[in-house]
Amino acid sequence: MKFENKFLWGGATAANQIEGGFLEDESGDSISDHLTQGSKTKVRKFTKTIDSNEYYPSHKGIDFYHDFPEDIKLLGKLGIRAFRLSIKWSRIFPNGDESEPNKKGLQYYDRIFDELHKYNIAPVVTLSHFDMPINLVSKYNGFANRIVVDLFVRYASTVIKYFKDKVKYWITFNEINFACLPTGNLEVLGVYNNATTDYTNPIDNQSLRYQALHNVFIASALTVKYAHSLNLGIMVGCMISHVTLYPLTSHPTDQTKTQEEDALFNNFCGDVQVKGEYPFYIKKYFDDNNIKISIFNRDKQILKEGTVDYYTFSYYMSNCVSHSKNNETTAGNLLGGVKNPYLKMSDWGWQIDPEGLYYTLFKIYDRYHLPIMISENGFGAQDVIKNGVIHDQYRIEYLKKHIYWMKKAINQGINVFSYMVWSPFDIVSSSTGEMDKRYGLIYTDMNSKGEGSLARIPKDSFYWYQSEIKKGLTSS
Ligand code: BG6
Image (cartoon, rainbow, N blue to C red; front, top):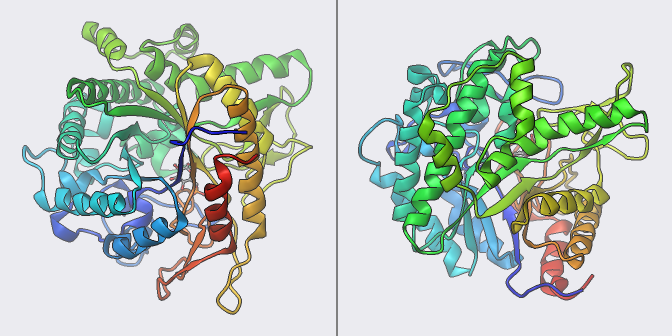
């Protein structure tokens, strides 16, 4: 099996999960800075003000803010060719609505990109990874307010222009389709209401949520248009959380229910961002659910002119869908489902399905015919460190099998140009805010309370991925 030489083996992260450096260099605070630490059994809380009795994991992250030269040196040793990170909007515009950017924020990311280039690693930059200056949440209710579209585009065009010679690959909104769930209000949209403060009992205003999502689509499309206007070959992608769905049985209602859920969660946002228009099925969904949003006349043209250049998605699991109740269930970062009797789950209830990656790549390429980046794939587990080493064979098995099925897909003629492990380092978990759920190829010596030396120790999976990258372009 042969890959093109330019295949981008990579690793992915997000600012709120690695950086720390809270309020440093005149940065503002953002949504993630107000999310408390949780666990497998304890839901994270959003607090409007910082409560000194709580621990907020993003304030420390894994201290990449200060440690990045050493961390990037390790990435160089790992041999990856691309590193996905996000820019924290509130480092550039601390309140989100200033007219001029914070120079120190720009300089910070500039140093990171220079460091990456030193090791021949291409940065892949997410503009919004579950993060927005907190002022935009409290003052405007996030993307529910159209003003925030302009503020986002000001931020996005500022950084794209500033880094135009150093960053070729951009992604607008991480896992934008979380906005199709009541639990995605805060993360993706910056909308604050009962649906975001009480995950177990969300009181959701669907019209407001889909209006905010529409505004995000516009912000994304205007960003793509801006990037293209520079005529530098900059590429901008979408990012979908693809939770692959199978009907539990051959019962016809299992098929139609799967089709409906797949359309709404996995396809809708990608359809808008790739095809530049709302798909037919969403109109019916809006009617059935009495969802009313206003779309300006010019919006249709903006969506058409701002379609993405490549498709990216995270892939961790698959779930089943059933017409009947009383099935065994699975978990997920925001979306659970019905258990598949043929698959195993991680300790966090995420169902492991390497072959599903092949199925998903086929489906996506068949639908969009765009180059694909797998922008997240990895295994969260509790690691044991003994005598300074971590034997994480379970993670190697997970990654090895997923890469095997990705290669099969490439062999079928599917244009996958990048694969990113989530994540090169152990970092703060997004859904639970803990450190016990580790994804890294490199161990971070820190516990869920933020205690530890922060030392980085390559695990067995680090050396495995290193050799996989070396031989990977030609081997099966
Ligand atoms: C994706 C997010 O949903 O999954 C990441 O883009 C996140 O930010 C990753 O970390 C894994 O989820 P978790 O909750 O286990 O950290």
